[in-house]
Length: 261
Ligand SMILES: CC(C)(COP(=O)(O)OP(=O)(O)OC[C@H]1O[C@@H](n2cnc3c(N)ncnc32)[C@H](O)[C@@H]1O)[C@@H](O)C(=O)NCCC(=O)NCCS
Ligand SMILES: Nc1ncnc2c1ncn2[C@@H]1O[C@H](COP(=O)(O)OP(=O)(O)OP(=O)(O)O)[C@@H](O)[C@H]1O
Image (tube, rainbow, N blue to C red; front, side):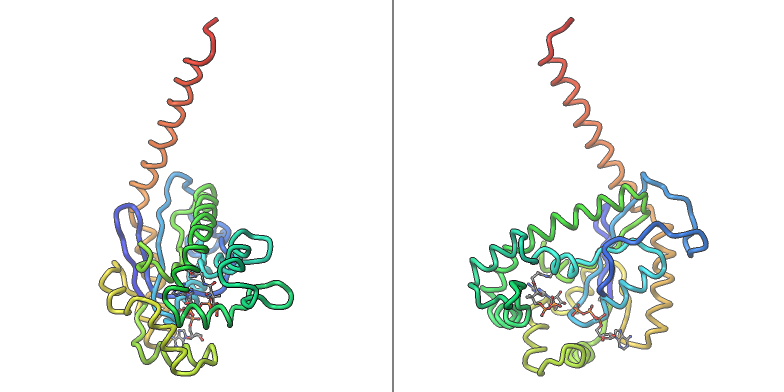
């Protein structure tokens, strides 16, 4: 697993789990234990190959009291019936990708898009803008909660603009967990950048190829390192300058438009 820092944004790579989108500020006695600093926050992107352990590591950070946002959870949320992405998916792929109750048939859609790159691009074009909006909303909530940093689990972090487990381990874990054949598991892995490229692009690597206790130890050390980091400064300054500019603009506009007494 890896973490990457670019400018004000620190990106991590490697693990993901089904978890709530945002955890509360660490309770007293939690391992951070500091008072909230609403003007300090930076982002940590977590990525890695399929079944490399992203969810497991994200859950670990969540248990340590970190704010986490799981993009796979958001991706499931925005394709529910009634949401714009659901309607567009049916328009693009036809009613055969629906279950009887109107939910997306994930198996059918998954088989389609993991085997056909052009179909995957079509689905990405529908879902990614919606996912992005939700991610921004959740991140802003964390900002208002005064979080020091937020970990965003973004499986396609590097593809769209590791935790390292070697390819075979990744393949075996994916086949075991999802009950997939070798061919189907390989098709899913092929849909993402090779792991070594993700490693090269990351700033920090969590190696999840060994015992879980090793991964846990690495995560604890990393969390301590991120807690001390000054990565939040450019982001906070950027937000403050942006807000100040908007306020000044509105003030000048009001002065021009309103009649003077
Ligand atoms: C195609 C769908 C219905 C398959 O669902 P299914 O439950 O079988 O798989 P699941 O969502 O658990 O994904 C399995 C793995 O494939 C990865 N994955 C999902 N979509 C994509 C994609 N478009 N390209 C590459 N990898 C993908 C996931 O991150 C995960 O690692 C679903 O993955 C989907 O709606 N994908 C589009 C949304 C998306 O791009 N998600 C990734 C978030 S960055
Ligand atoms: N260090 C480890 N040792 C053994 N098994 C592990 C380890 N880490 C994770 N696993 C197992 O590997 C499987 C894949 O892990 P996980 O679901 O966290 O991966 P993921 O990267 O989130 O997958 P996906 O990309 O499909 O969302 C799970 O069954 C998990 O329990």
